[in-house]
Amino acid sequence: MGKLANATATYFKKRTYFRIILVLLILFLWGYLQISELFPIQEHDLNFHAIQEIKHRYTGNTFSFAVLGDSKNSPVFDQVVSRLNQDGDLDFAIIGGDLVLYPTLETYRSFLRQWKKIQIPTLVIPGNHDLAFQDRYLYYSIFGRFYYSFVLGEAKFIFLDNSNEYNLGDEQLAWLNKELEEGLKYKYCFVFMH
Image (cartoon, rainbow, N blue to C red; front, top):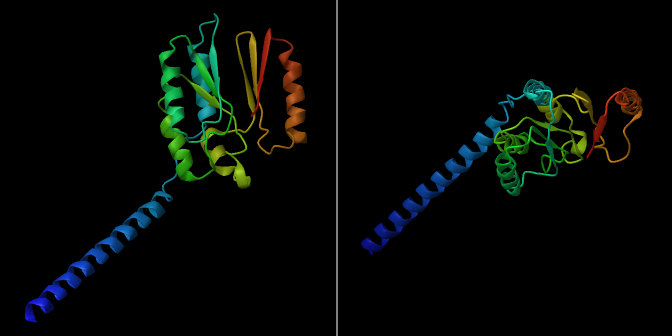
């Protein structure tokens, strides 16, 4: 009986140690996730920086660009980025919204890991997934303005925020009318929205 009691005690000791290690591991992972929320994303005004880079690279000749959309944190987007990087003729890219599946710090971090692999300047506009639940802070803090425009040679580019899926709103609509009127001065006028 002594051997059986010893074996049983050893079994329960090992089981107790396993449970303690498991609980500690769970607490560590939970703590890590909570702590990671304390560290903000370092990237800011990425659209502004991309526009500056596009203008800096522009030689006054022709240009070409790619239009993408709905990456939604998909691993397939990595394949798209790879193909984009293989095309040596592109000057910049535009991602037309739905960068993330839903707006959290981690989904934006995941998107930024993919986005950083793109070897040409890349602009984004918000989609309904990027600003879901009226959570506009993360997008704005990373990319900047929700709607904007810029001129490149004989082309005007206008980017809109229709992420609410209903309308542009009076302020943005007034801005758009002004931008379109100014766009008449250019040979080309491109308008993008999700």
